[in-house]
Length: 362
Image (cartoon, rainbow, N blue to C red; front, side, top):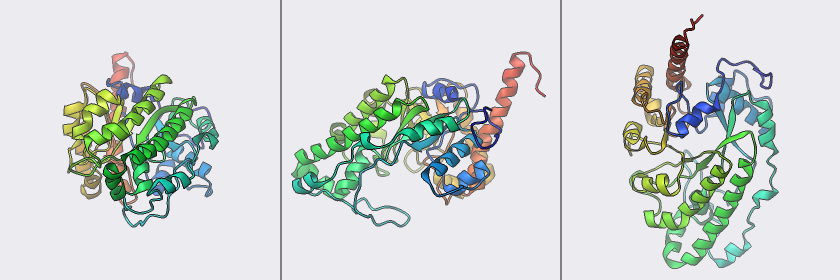
């Protein structure tokens, strides 16, 4: 360790292992992947409580938690850039029809579009100095192209606009897309950033939010530009998208050319089946269903995690994690049962590597 982080942790990160996964190759040991966890899980992993309420302290806690948990990266936002909307009704879920601010040409012209170039990206440099050697940042956006368009217009209104005023809708997607593209372009220039996360939910359980053809017209071109920006800096780009995606996987792989896909649900298509279908074409990330993590015994969680690692043992292109994220209602011990499966296997992998090199393990 180089003294950059608060305390010593057991696992030495190596971002190159995640790069092997994203290049559809076999890593030398199991790799973990998670979009984000909850504050209690971060504190449990890092072994300390957040020192203050500032965003910087929270992000340092998150970096330490990802490091302590055996991850080779940490998820962050580059800054506070985002698209302001009205308050949305929130309970356990968020309505797709509340908070909208654009309904017509007048409200479009009056909306104060944020400029990503006016935001401070120095957080990425400070967190880079805080991280141990071998670790990188994964920068996620303030939601994605489709999610922000829905937030600005409202889902039902957007569906009507597809028919009644497609020209205005085109302009809305353009304003959102070009700003997200600039945000990611700037983030990708920082040495501390290892990959870009395009977090943009695209579907319900049985279909995409928009028809595949409308997705191809309004949404996918902007994601393609963001992936191109990442690749220009020799950095991968991965997609987190909840919901049904079977009808657009060929677009995700061959048109947008994403390096990895995250978010899987057993009620749509279990990760095991997704890996068999697409694991040779795109990295499969996470996938242990959140509902399964909540309701299953520790032993069943360990067994499924082991089986998934065994399924990917020959060809790689897989990192173990949840199907979505670790919200507060996932018991911490259940989450640990999942990641500890990889970490224990990781220890055995080190033994095998050392034995192959003719070394004994202490």
